[in-house]
Length: 148
Image (cartoon, rainbow, N blue to C red):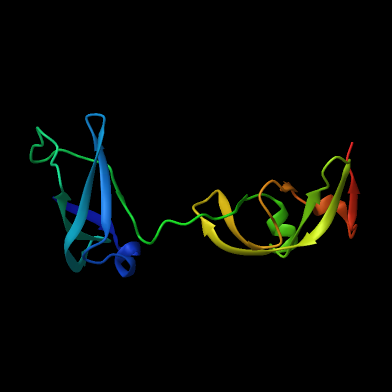
């Protein structure tokens, strides 16, 4: 199967990368078998071969949605994007203290943007922390917020 891919992904695509597609209610695995590096109109093409079973009834010209694994899957702690980033540069956030009506300032280290919705959290937060993600513009230089 030949697939066009946006040139943005050219450095991340290589022969052997796994992919998958859903067809007729079942997931099928594929693997990149050839990479055409020439970019035309902002896209380049790759060939993919099915690994194992091939879906029955595939026809030329049929469109399928593919997921290509660009790296090893990993568990990441994610923080929703919000107005806080504009005010803090992602260097700190307000964390709501468990069982209280207070939010305290805490330094964090954010990593990559994950799409247009999340930041990867590298340091400063743990799963279950409740973060105030709205704008901090009206909070001034306070270290603690009293929530009502």
